[in-house]
Length: 239
Image (cartoon, rainbow, N blue to C red; front, side, top):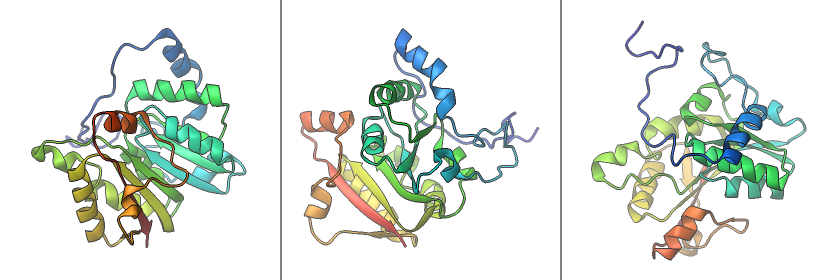
C-alpha cells in the first residue's frame, strides 16, 4: 500500500479540527441514524467512487435551477434559512463536525425544507468529484480562525482550498466570506487578490461592514458580538 494512500483509496490529507464534541443527545443520535442517509451525496465516498468520477450536483435536487455550497455550516442555521428563503435553489453543505451535522438535521426537520444535501466530512473530498463550473454561489461563514501564526496555513483561504473552489464555481458566481477575526480578513484579502480566479466586490467601507440583505446571523456571529468583536462581510466574484 502506498504511504500516501488511505486503505479506502483516498489520499492522506492532513485534517485539523474537531470531528466530535460533547456527547450527543439521544435525539441528535436519532437524527444521524434516521435522517442523514437520505441527505447524503452519492459518489463522494472513496470506497463507492475510487476513480473519482464526477457527480451531477443538480441531479440531487430534481427541478432546482442552481446549486449553492456552504463550506463549514456550523450548526446549520444559515443554511436552513437560505434553503427556506430560496426553495428553487439546491444547497450542499459540508461540515466534518458531527455535532454540528446533528444540529443541522434537527433544524431541517423543524423547518421542513427539502432542498438540501449534506457531506458530513472534508470538503476536499467533494471538490474531487464536483464538475467544473457547477456551483452558482458559495459561502464561507465564520471559518475556524486558527489564530496562532504557525497555524495560518491551516486556514481555508489558502491555495490548497481556493484553487479547487475556483474550479467548481461558474464564472460570475459569488463567494461570501464572513469572519470576526481581523487577521483572517487580512489573509483572505491577500490570498484572494493574488488569485486569478476571484475579484473582490467592494467600492467602500460599507461593502464589508454591513451584512448582506438576506443575511441570517449565526450563533458564532452572536458570540462574537457579545464578546466585542466586529464582523466583516467580504464578497468575491468568480471571474
